[in-house]
Length: 198
Image (cartoon, rainbow, N blue to C red; front, side, top):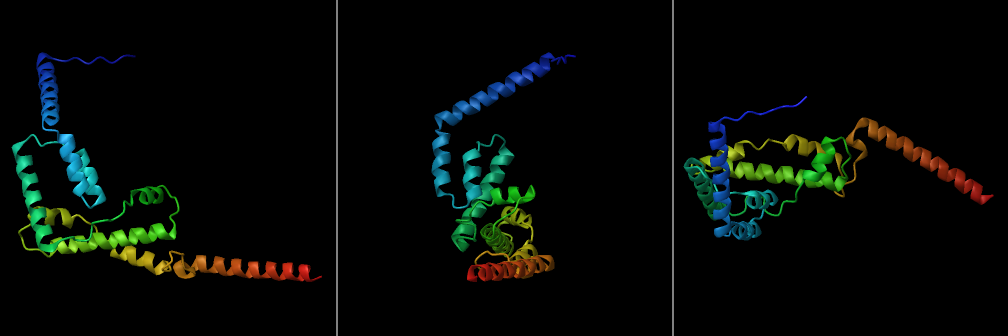
């Protein structure tokens, strides 16, 4: 079985116009050394996702996109000038442990503590932006989309020691299993000591 695609003259002219538009945009990016601009900007970015967004960015083509992006940038500059860092700078990338958890994998205590720190930083950033006046409507809209994970964070923190070790009290079943394991270990050690003492 084969598929055939029929294109009309208008489809072809639309394709030609898009591809020529894309090639013109690429040529303009090269002339403006946009790759270098992106790299210089990425070096200044402090939040791991900002670096990625900058490196993947392309010039906006449509006037309304340009205006919106300029407004967002102006709001961000005003925010940084008035508040400084809002808690996102230096945050480590949590995507690998999150992917593993979504696939049913286990996370170490230190990875769980990392996620707790990130949840807290994101909530602080959200709260900071949401408390601002109406001067930053675009940033407020973005911040409003950050989910409240304080309850999840609290549950994780309550289940971990400061070292990242999972506490026996994390779940009733875990406490029971660990108590049985300790008892069995102590019995085995007594038997070994008795055998060694003979």
